Amino acid sequence: MNIDYKTFISKYNGDIIDIRDSYSFNKGHIPGSINLNINSILYNVNKLSKDKIYLLVCDTSKTSLKLSKILNSLGFNTYSLEGGYSKYVLVN
Image: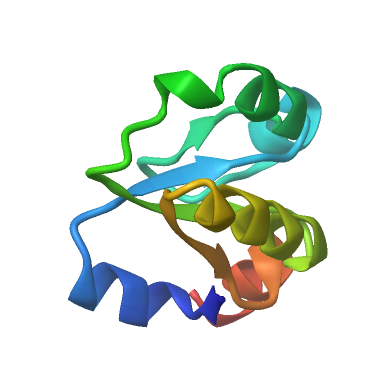
């Protein structure tokens, strides 16, 4: 499910995971987010907590939405940042 940044921050006390590559993350990212690329998450899914809420961030939300659906099917509580980091930069 997509959610905008301000709604996520106001409703949830969750973690923000930027799934872009480290080069893109280092060029700019949401303050407080951590960088775990998609492969790291998929190979280390057992390190995520099913008790936390996560906001997944990619460039446009296409990849983060797909990953969110996968993780949610495994019992995690995740959202995809609507419009991705590209939209975040425009509105914040």
